[in-house]
Length: 253
Image (cartoon, rainbow, N blue to C red; front, side, top):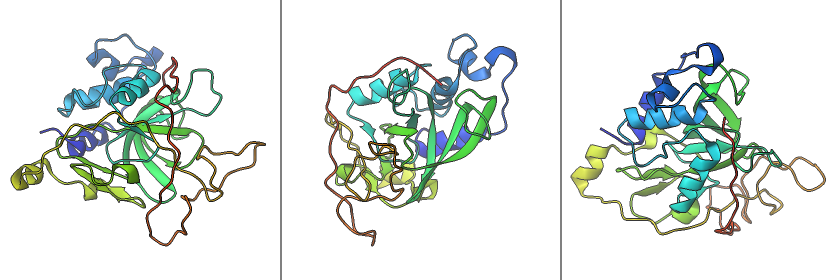
């Protein structure tokens, strides 16, 4: 059976896997590609093995994966459970989200937890295996998330997705424990409807600046979610949208 839970279970089963010499690895081979930087191959192979082919791109390229989700109106700067998270520090030579990728398995107010391939204990974008890593949720290195069209729907933090069919919105924290099962969704007759093309919406810090890790001038931004309301459990709103024509570039992790 497919779905976010199966995606995460399959990824977790590879924790501890290590590559061979020269980036040789089972995931690139499974996808029919030569040994290479394989973080995106890991996501594609896990999607294939978990029955989620079609809701993830088949690509070895991080920016190609980013563009794939953006064309479908399924790119957001808010985390989601089972989403493909794309990393890339501002100003990197390959473009936004072009350095590394993995699968988001949990988030809270300040962090995201990710299972990724071709990394290590330090979170390298060119490591030696499959690891579970925690990152600051609003780090400049965290670019965006591709939202898969899972059959059971999606658990996400994006308030602009609230009210869509199959969407459960938890802005503060969520994990796979919050996922509905595919069988439960089918039993109660909930169906997923096509989502229209929509550009991603950035989180902002407490000063109203677009989330990105640093303000102009290099001063560290706050690590707290803020968009005009106090952190008291009330929902955030008023984020600025990206343009539909936002550029993508080449590169992979």
